[in-house]
Every structure is written in structure tokens, then in C-alpha cells.
Length: 445
Ligand code: GDP
Image (cartoon, rainbow, N blue to C red; front, side):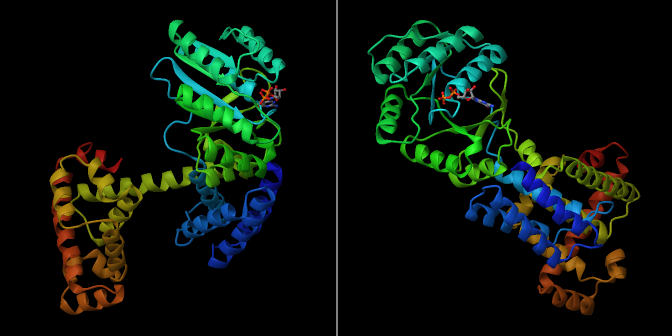
């Protein structure tokens, strides 16, 4: 399925690549194909639709980077949007196990890889983080499952709770809790029973156990090969029990990118780990870039475009720095500066990076300065002639009126921009005088 999607996109982008510039129609055509491809990869319709809307917005109005083709540029935009949709907050591999013994509840359908994943995670915590781990199987209906966990435990050198026949899941959970506390364990895993389908009893059991141990993490294990079904399962488990993250197994096969994408978009739950095989080592922290690259199958192009963009930004910064050092700062420089600010997270991000700018930022905050102002200012500079940009001193009343009209804004706003330019030009001159490697260099980083 991954192949299908990536092949399909290749076809689309090949066609684009042959054209000189990226028109609105190009973007639309390309995205229509991307959408079909996503649907074929088992991404649900609303998710695909949202995704396309997001990409469309990003692609429109984005300047095509020199030295890459428009097709390559679109790949990068699609890739970034995929990463955006896939990624959650924080490090997905960071399990909440700060209060020992920390209970981790493992839930999922039978055959999803729940027991295997429990042991993989236990091994990881033991070996990577030096944690003392206990595992307990609550699958009272399947003695074989309980034994399987015990065997895996022996294999990886992790303790399992002794099996007591006739005990119910809640009693086992309580025993695990006590044993974990008495035995000085940092973490204990509860591998709950699985069924082939979700049923009321299964959910009730998991909920009862949850209420007894109050897990720090409830990880849902789903088979990544089951696509849309996996998403439905995740939604159901989350509604009824509440999950803190998802583990997608069998991503070593020709798994569908769609499962990961829909899972994240529909349930809002972060994907935390992916299973990549039957071996105990075959578990990785979820990396959105990796899955996105796999969905697209175009990692090289993404890297190329990133490189090209970085180079161009670095060149721009260099050029600007040289100009400032000479005390030159015209409207073109200001525009470039404003655009950089937008890119670097707006005023706050930019000012935060420039030492000694705290005061100026406060003034700007007080004046209600935000990103929409940056955009308006860029529009005003765009309405200036080449001469005016190079020499802002030319900006007298009649010219101001024309520029304000051209950008659909008030002359008063333009006056503010001109004043700001003057202040910044003064400041740049001072900073320039402080020499190379000074504040400016830091600010440009
Ligand atoms: P459970 O019923 O949910 O506990 O599932 P198991 O842990 O018993 O796993 C069922 C089968 O799937 C076993 O044969 C596992 O070795 C296999 N399995 C689990 N995770 C993965 C994975 O990430 N990739 C592959 N290829 N097989 C896996």
C-alpha cells in the first residue's frame, strides 16, 4: 500500500516537474491525485479532505525555491503537511513512569501484538533506562497467553507475576500492584485480555482494572495492517477506556500509511511506538518524518528541497549582514527582515533571539503588534516602487497616498512603518558598528 501511494504521487509529480512554474491549476491537479492516492491507501475521506485543504493553503502563495523544480517543491509541502498531521506533542517515546511503581495498561484486540509489545517495551525500559520492570498477564481466558508472557519475560530477563489459577483480572491487577510496590519495581505492565472483536465484557474488564490501578499510561496496540478497522478500534477503546497513546504493529510489512495518518487525525491520539517485527528488539519510537517519508517514498527530494531552502536563507542572511555592517538598511532589507520574522515564529520568536531587544518587544506588545501587522507591512512595501524601496527618503505625501491605496491601508499605518524603518536603520547602524561576530551575527542565526 505504501508503494501504491508513493508510486501514484511519483506519477503526479513527474508531470509537474516537467513544467516551468507552479500554477494554481497545477497545485489543484496534483492535490486531486494526492487525495485519490490517500483514499486508496485507506485514509478516511474526511481526513484526506482536511489534509488536502491544509496542503492547498500551504502551497498557494509559497514562492518556488530556486534550484528545485515545482514538483519537488510540492513533494516537500505534502511531506511537511504529513509530518504535521502525524506528530503529537512531546517525545512519543517518553513514557510517564516518574512515580514508581508506575502502572502501564496494555489494551487491544487479540492478535494485535499486545503481548509481544508489552515484552518489547519492558525490555526497552530495562535496558535503555535501567528500570526494574514487572509484567502481569490478565488474560484469564487464555492460559496460553499468560504462559507466553512468562516465556517472553524469561527470554528478556524481566520478572512476571506468578500465575495463580482461578483469579479474576481485577484480583491479578491488585496483586501486581502490591508486588510491584513491595518488590521495588519502577514500572509494572498489565497485559489485558484481548478478543477478536470489541465486546462489552472486554471493555468492562479493562475499565475495572483501570479503576483499580489508575494507570499512568494506557497504550492501545493495533495492527497497522488493518487500516480503517484499526482506526475504528482505536476510537472505540478511547471512548470507553481512554488511551494515552497508540502502538502500531506490523509496520514491517507492506503496512498502509493510511492507518497511521487516519489514526492520528481521527482519534487525536498520538502514535507512540511502531512494531517492526516479531523479535524483541523490533520496536521503535514513532517518528513522523520517517512514516511521512515512507508514505511518499521520496526522502531524497525532501532532503534536497530542505537543503536548497537552507542555502538560500543562509545566503540572504549573509548578504543582509554585510549591508548592515555598512550601515545600509532600506525597505527591501526591512521586507526581508519582516518575512524572516514571519517564518521564525513572528515578532516574539525573532525578538527573543536578539539580545537587548526586550525593551523594544515590550513597546511593540503595548502597541498591539502582531503577525497580521507584519503581513500588512509587507503588503505596503510591495506597493512601493523600486526607487522608493531603495531610498525611503523619497516617500512624501503623494507617494504615500498612492502606496496606502495600493495596499488597501491607511496612510497613518504607512507612517508607522516608515518610522519603524528609520528606528531600525539607526539600530542596524549601531549594531553594524559593533563589528562582525557581534550581536548581528547572533541575531541572524
Ligand atoms: P496479542 O494476542 O495481541 O497478545 O498478540 P501477540 O503479541 O501474541 O502477537 C501475535 C503475533 O504477531 C505473534 O506471532 C507476534 O510475533 C506477531 N507480531 C507482534 N508484533 C509484530 C510486529 O510488529 N511485526 C510482525 N511482523 N509481527 C508481529
